[in-house]
Image (cartoon, rainbow, N blue to C red; front, side, top):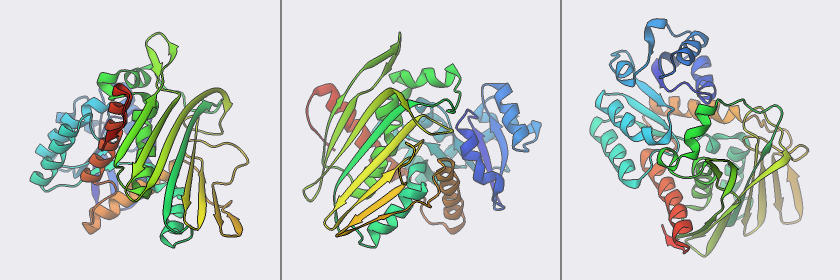
Length: 351
C-alpha cells in the first residue's frame, strides 16, 4: 500500500486524487493546507481522518506511516518543500514546473539521489489518451521520422469552466512566485513537455512573449510565439493566444490545445486537452493517400491525471523510473527558461 500525503489541497488536487481514491494499491492518508477549511473539506471527501489534517507541511512530513507526498503548491514553494520532504525520508511527486531555476532543480535531483527516494515531476499531458495514442502511432512508424511539431494553445471562455478562487489565480500573475507568465511558463510546461517528448531537447529557442492587461496587475503573456530548433534539421513552434469570445467545450480550464506533428510519410493532429472545440476528432492521422480519424478515443482531461497517477503507482511498485523523472523535469525547465531569456533579450538562445 502506497501511503500518500497531499501538501496543498487547492482546485487541482481533485484531479490528482482521482486514481488514489480508486486504486487498491494506494491510499491518501494525510492532507495539509494553510486554508484549514479547504483541507478539512478535502479530508472529508477523501476519507482522511481529521487527526491527519495539518496546516504546516512539517507536521505532515513528521508522520512515520507516510511514503510519498504530492506537492501541489505555488511554484516558488516547490523547491524548499521538496527538500524538506526528502530530508524527512519521503518520496516526492511535485507539480510542474519543478522549480524556478536550474540551480533549484539540481538541488532537488541531488537531494532525491542522496535520500534514495523517487522524484517525479507531475506532467499529466503525456498521459492524455489522444497523446498516448499518437505516441504509439509514431513508435509504429505511421508518420515516419518526425520533422516538425506545431502547437497551438488557445484560451477562451466557457460557461461550464471551473470556478477558481482569486487567491489561486493571483500568484500565477506574480513572476516572483510563478516564474513567468500563466500561459507560456505555467501552462506552457505541458506544451514544452510535448515538444521535448516527441522531438527531444531543442538546440535553440527564439521567443516573442506578448503582454495583455486583463485588469490592473493582471498581465497575460499573450499573444506569444516560441520557435524551436531541434537536432537533425528539425523545427517546432508554440503559438499562445487568448480569444476572449471563443467558447471552448470544457468542465475544467477554458482552453483548447492543438498539436500537429509532421513526419517523412505522414501527419498527426492531436486536438483538445484542457478543453476542446466541438466537432473536431481527438486524433487524425494522414498517411500517404489515406486519412484516419480516431473518434472513439476518451477525451476527458481528468483521464490524463488518472493515467499519470496510475503510472506513478506502477513505477513505485516496480522500481522503474517515472515519467517525468527529476532529470527529465529539469530538461523541460531548461527549455522553458530559455524561452523566457530569449523574450527578454530579443535573440535566439541556445538550450
